[in-house]
Image 1 (tube, helix red, strand yellow):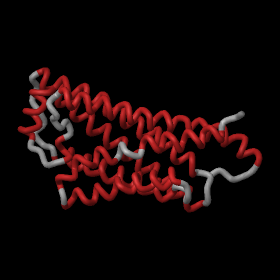
Image 2 (cartoon, helix red, strand yellow):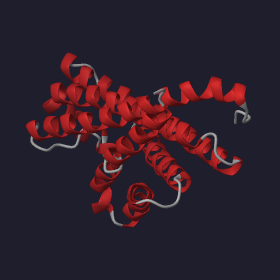
Image 3 (cartoon, helix red, strand yellow):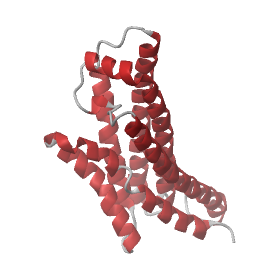
Image 4 (cartoon, helix red, strand yellow):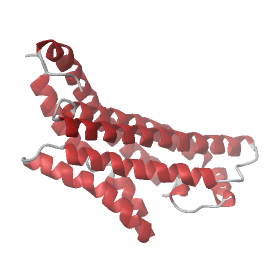
Length: 230
C-alpha cells in the first residue's frame, strides 16, 4: 500500500484514475463478449462449449468438436477477450480500494490475486479446447485424458467465487448502487456452492459472473470522474 502524503498522492492519483477507467472498459468488454458468446451459442443450437463444467468423457468431447469445431473456435476467441475484460474490471475494483485502511487493502489484493488465477485458469482451459477444435478440423487424435481439465475448471470456478467475495467485502457501506453491487457479487460464490449439490444450477454460474458488470461500470465511472483532473 502506498503511504499517504503529497508526493504519493501526486504519483498515485493519476494512475488510479487510469485504472478505474480501464476497469470500466473491462466491465463493458465482459458485457459485449457475453452477448457475442450468447449469439454464437444460439447459432450452434445451444450447445455447451465448456462441457468440463460437468463430467464429460473424451469421446463426447471429440464428438462435440467434430460437429461444432468452427463454432468452438469463435466461442473461445470471444471467451478469451471475456477473460481479459474480467482482469481489467478486477484491476479497477482493486484501484478503487487499494488506498483504504490496511485490512481492506490486503483483502482487495487477495481478491485481485484470485481474479488473476481465474483468468489464467480460463485461458488454460480455452487453449485446450481450441487445440481440440483444431485437431477435429485437421483429423488429428483428440485428447484421451480429461482429468487435469476438470481440475483447471474447478480452480477457475473457485477462484472466481473468491474474487467476487473479496471485492464484495471491500465495497464501501451505504448507497443503493454499492448495496446492489455487493449483493450481485455475493451471488457468485453462493451459486457456486449451491451448484455442488444442485448440478442443475451450473448454467447459472455463467450468468452470475456477468450480472455485476453493468453496476461495476457505473460505480467505477463515478469514481473515475471524481478522480480525473478537471
